[in-house]
Image (cartoon, rainbow, N blue to C red):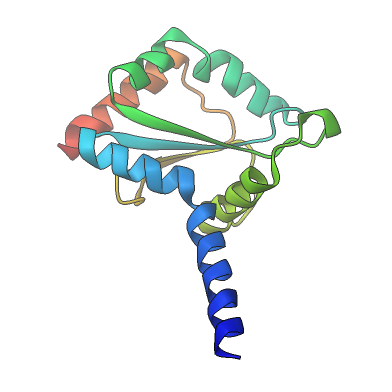
Amino acid sequence: MKTLLSAILMVVLSVGFHAQNRLESAKKTAAENKELILLNFSGSDWCIPCIKLHKNIIETEDFKKLESDKVIVYINADFPRNKKNQLSADLKKENASLADAYNKKGLFPYTLLLNSEGKILKSWEGLPSENALAFSKEIREIREKQK
């Protein structure tokens, strides 16, 4: 009986730890490099504002420079609906765990700027009104205030 309970406890704990793998990794990297974490909830194949956010902001050079300049660690928690775009079971669980922690209302797109401890510094509900340059500049300014 003791062995069975130990095995169940290990499975539960390993699932809990694995579910936060990307976030925990991002927190560690952000802490080491004094970066922020940008967490984006999207529906990449069904949410028109999400698709626009990725095309007009996230896929731009201004945004990519935030990552290369070590300003942010980017996490995309995607919830695709089309069968051909489905994620692995582990990634689905991890995204669901992130949504439970940070997106209880189920908003799409929903973007959060977090510090290295996971505390929310800023949030954007829906498609940000800023262009990629202004969006990136705002993130840089928030990071400077955090130093």
